Image (cartoon, rainbow, N blue to C red; front, side, top):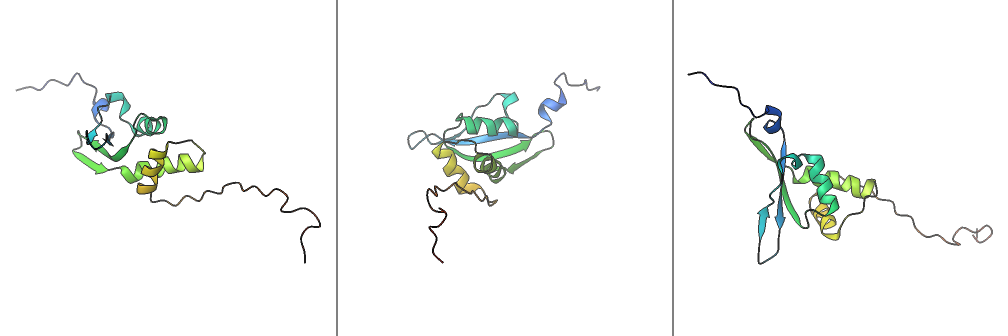
Length: 127
């Protein structure tokens, strides 16, 4: 029996796909969010998290069905979100900040500007 080639392009399914588990509250619980196929790459997921498309993310997984693998991606995405939020100054929601603080493992030192008004006036320091 001869197999015909698939009419579906392989790159469409033979790639990393990211899915988000979101908490919808006590009455609804957690659910894997339904997502358009073209919006399952890591960059789109990160952008959607930052823009508030996911209000209370809990966990992320990456998978490749063609290769037959899946893996935990929560820490990877949380680290990238932390770098963008704290390193690049991207504004994030309080729930997303909580997600990052709970899951990111890379240390990100954030130096905040301190108001030093009048602290270093010439002649005011005693020796």
